[in-house]
Amino acid sequence: MPDHAKKGRPKKPAAKRNTRGKKAQPSGPKPRVWFMLFLVILIAGGFGYFLMYINGSAEEQPVVIEKVKPKKKAIAKNKPIPKAPEESWVYESLDKKEITVDLPNDDIKTVNRRYRLQCASFKALSQAEEMKAKMAFMGEEPNIKKVKGSKGTWYQVILGPYDNKRQAEKTRHKMQRANINTCEIFYWT
Image (cartoon, rainbow, N blue to C red; front, side):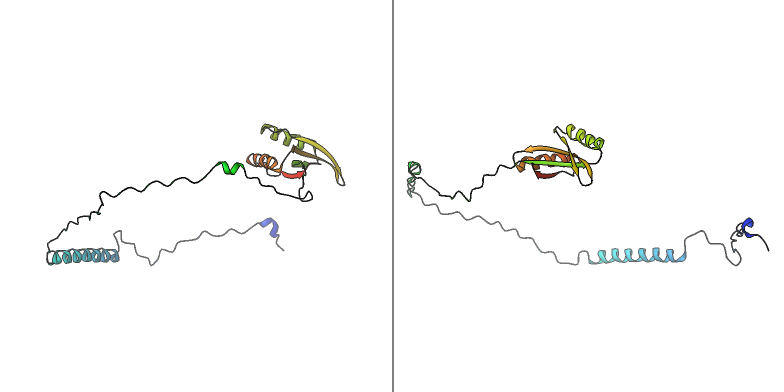
């Protein structure tokens, strides 16, 4: 029994060209090309002849240009100008008005909540320090907060506190322009 593993793959013979029965191609353009060229010249010549045939066959009509004079508006002379209306608004009357609105104290909520911006939370302190450095280059003062959770110790990179949400949003958009897209707004705790 022959050993096929040592033998390797069989070599394929090179593909041969079959040149029998084929004639040499003529080097000039094919007859179809000559026919198309003749047809284009025939159509162009026919169109040119048509244009020469109709030239001058139409009757020429004189062109009449009418000038239209604008109508003048009749202006009445010696008509008196009406008097300007007198101002009837009195500004002092607004000072004497007083508006009072009674609001119950239950409806007014004076909640002074502060906001923080949490941009990252890492397991490793070195990653949190790297994020803090990026944010410091943006002109912010981030803090790293160590939090112990059920899955171990986490290092949160936070900004704040902010007195209102608008300031927190402004800083968040600043971070987004610096390609830090992970910032979330939370209440300060």
